[in-house]
Length: 353
Ligand code: MRU
Image (cartoon, rainbow, N blue to C red):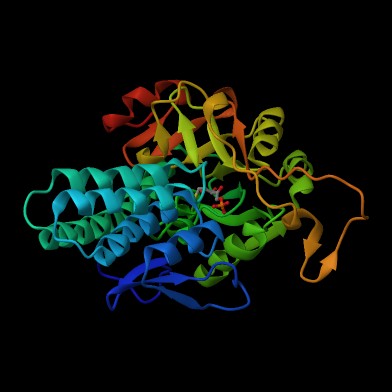
């Protein structure tokens, strides 16, 4: 994979290890963490040093290779048994984004289907992880360009609202929702991005805003409870969000708060787009009620730095994702074109609605 200097890549294979941008430190510090072992990769995914559905898929693919190279046996069956444990550890990190499971399955399929010595198998696993990485970057660029075809033509220059961070940081690079934003910006179709701050972890305020600033895209950060008001004032022409898992009927799991943005968009007749690679579509699930929703530590809600926000004696509920029903979604923008949610089955063939 060739890297260009002025772009952001959250997961880089470099010097026989993986460099991750530490997303827990942005926007104040742009720092990298070097990952040499599969256990460290699992921890980095769990603690959200690397986050965003496609990015954790790429990271987990490298995690499988890092685990493979630690296995010392030259016996193929023993090797595969140990590799299953590595896969299990990586699968246990986060439950909602299906790209994690998709990437691990592809790596394991490669392991089972590759003939030759264990040493050769390890080499093939590294090549497969690199291919997953490179393909995701190309996929995001295609999503960005396909998004241009379905964005409203009126007005000529749009203000787009997004939720959470579905940008370069959340993918191999370029982004899905922010990929559409980037393509629109380059084509002169965008005036400004409105970024929901995205409580409790603030991916919008910290990461989406940071990416926009890097690229010179004008960005306005609002708190989550301001989105409907901004829509009513006519400030928003389209909503574009990413996805963590899309069921076969188009129901879409994405960062908590996405569902309320979709309801508000419907109420104001504003198109609501989901931008995601086909690796995010889980055709095994008929609808969104079957998508597992991650619950995270309540400290994310009640603690900011050293400050405790709430009185003692209260309870917390901290689901990290919600499911937007398909009927609130205008189109799902993929690398093969944009599809009405009910038409996802056609997504394996390139087309644009
Ligand atoms: O908890 P996170 O930060 O991993 O959640 C990220 C999101 O919800 C993104 O919108 C989604 O993964 C799409 S990323 C292209």
